[in-house]
Length: 312
Ligand SMILES: NC(=O)C1=CN([C@@H]2O[C@H](COP(=O)(O)OP(=O)(O)OC[C@H]3O[C@@H](n4cnc5c(N)ncnc54)[C@H](OP(=O)(O)O)[C@@H]3O)[C@@H](O)[C@H]2O)C=CC1
Ligand SMILES: C[C@H]1O[C@H](OP(=O)(O)OP(=O)(O)OC[C@H]2O[C@@H](n3cnc4c(=O)[nH]c(N)nc43)[C@H](O)[C@@H]2O)[C@@H](O)[C@@H](O)C1=O
View 1 (cartoon, rainbow, N blue to C red):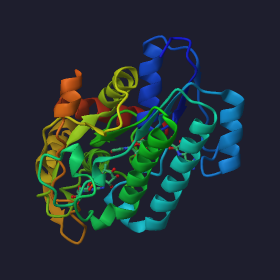
View 2: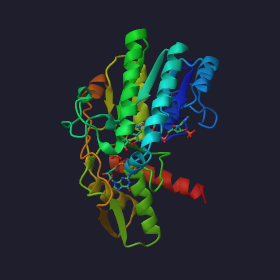
View 3: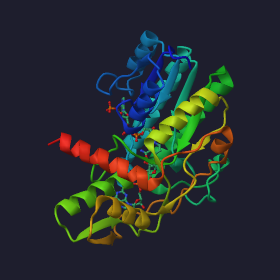
View 4: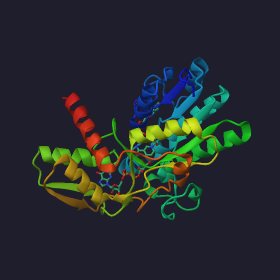
């Protein structure tokens, strides 16, 4: 990418898209193009084709999607499958039709089989049954991967697919029911401290293991791979370390300064027991994450407080 290349960031207002936009601006890329979902609904095929024909982007970061935590995925199963399938199909086909030089599709760690060997290697894709709670979303993501592969095979398009682990950071979604675990816990522990509540309840057994990567580190990895990676194979993006949900809760408790007890709500789903990414391919390409989990949670908490104060 040249500093004058026209770069389209789909999903630029989201946690990942805004981090990619920040990273590009910091590196001096000036010719960025983006639209909110209100300005351009990526489920509208004609609108997407008109946009690509009019703007003619050279590089595309596909960071727009319908995204949420385990309860959101399991509640809005049709929307998670339909919206993501239609958005990625429209974007990838329009990118092909208008001769986009390179497109990066963002998948997710939940594309891998629920009980695959750990850590998860890229070649474990489609070797077993998926986690039921986010199967619709995972199927949509796998379809996106296969679209990129097929357009490369048939037309020679340089469309690459990256698989981020669980992410958190600036501009995250803190919705009490629909968010991912880390932002949900930041909000819940903070509110409990503010309200002098004696207990914070976390979902599930607390035993599942999860890996967390700070969103600005992911953005840095995305720019690195957009610059240096042009192959058909998937690339996992993670830290290569994980911890239990209960250990995570204790970390969030420490960062937020909550002093009460933690209780478990076993009526809520645990989801996949573990999904630790094998990041050897990423490391061999020359990229490693920088932000450790405790530092990242502190940064995310400060962003949450800034957002909360701004909304008063
Ligand atoms: N968060 C995580 O833990 C992980 C996320 N990912 C992937 O990273 C990518 C970004 O995720 P994240 O930033 O967390 O998600 P967010 O929910 O923060 O952002 C999603 C973005 O997608 C846009 N969007 C949603 N629906 C439409 C639509 N119909 N038309 C146009 N735009 C739409 C939204 O635009 P607007 O704000 O304008 O409405 C929003 O900016 C996704 O592909 C996700 O699957 C992968 C692994 C983990
Ligand atoms: C990111 C990736 O992976 C996502 O899957 P996931 O990792 O299972 O989703 P999650 O972040 O919501 O973590 C859920 C784990 O955490 C426990 N848990 C405790 N307390 C809360 C809580 O308050 N909220 C939530 N959401 N989970 C909680 C919960 O019991 C479970 O064990 C996909 O949805 C999909 O979005 C995807 O791409």
